[in-house]
Image (tube, rainbow, N blue to C red; front, side, top):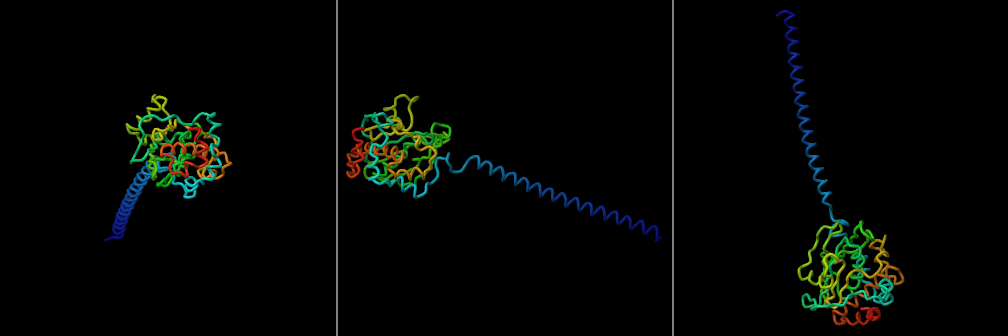
Length: 297
């Protein structure tokens, strides 16, 4: 074979090798693109899943479960000393109600549950007036029994009067007392989605005191039909800008504006409960605080 022929064959082999190498590179590049594209698809799917979960939300201020309150806050709310309540007495309630009784007279057959007189509460988590009244309700109920489920904190609607008032929720709360049954119904969440529906019997009790469903409002409490609470009877403004911890701590200073309002309301609620329980237990129902409010019931 001549020199020219050998050079020509070598050039052909090099050309073929170069083509094969180019093909291998192209194949590797395609595999990388496919792998990268698959990874990108997976990342997009994961990101979409995360965004959906975030849009659904986790338990927070607007959820019906609320935020578990620190044990210190719970103990301060449920353990207000009797001496502190006695010092507050009527508090600022008479000034706020202009001397009018905070409750409406009861009517109808006594409400009972499990053989005990029943305190029926109907409210809503977004409601600023419910936000105000849950504090004194929790204080008063704790004098007759135990809120067995850990307290959870929420804030009322940020788009209403007294916006974002720190409060408790009674949703899924538990209560044990030898003297009464407590039945809470939180109808609506903070973001105004349905939560709990009152039963026909509960709606009938509510309608007895507020016949017009267009003007029926929160909060509503029937104290075994001995008394009925329609609305609020202290100034919710005292809670504005306060945290759960600040409110709970202020309950132990009888001179604080919060204690004068919240504990004053708690004493009236305690008096209404005493009417349900035939003044039991005596140490609560014969206390100076309850004696002070009896004329206003």
